[in-house]
Image (cartoon, rainbow, N blue to C red):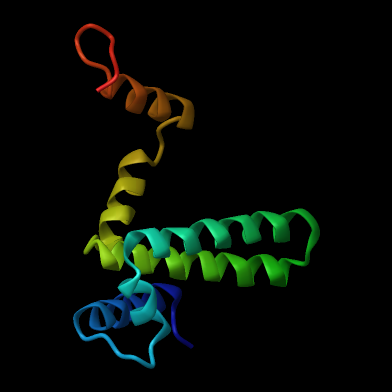
Amino acid sequence: MIHSRDTLQRLEEVLEQRRNTPSEQSYTSRLMAGGPQKIGEKVVEEAVEVVQAATSESDERVVSEASDLLYHLLVLLAFRKVPFQAVEEELARRFGISGLVEKASRKSAHLDSSGERT
């Protein structure tokens, strides 16, 4: 059995290959050719489908739609050359911090000395 981390790592490697060596037969290459706008549209579409599935469909559908969302998010990260490890590190940094506290710290970090957003 393949462990989920191994799957994510292997997928990230394939996405990097598709970015560096596009193939006309590759859905991933086609997405990347559309740039962040096209990939982002798919991320939004899949996020909506996850919510719809969670609201009124089976757990299997939620898993399927969540997989689609994660795949498209990984494509977006690969397009930007942002390793998934960076996301993991950010989640680790936030671990154990109240979500409310963490969110408030992000808002205050975007204010300049006069209290204006930067």
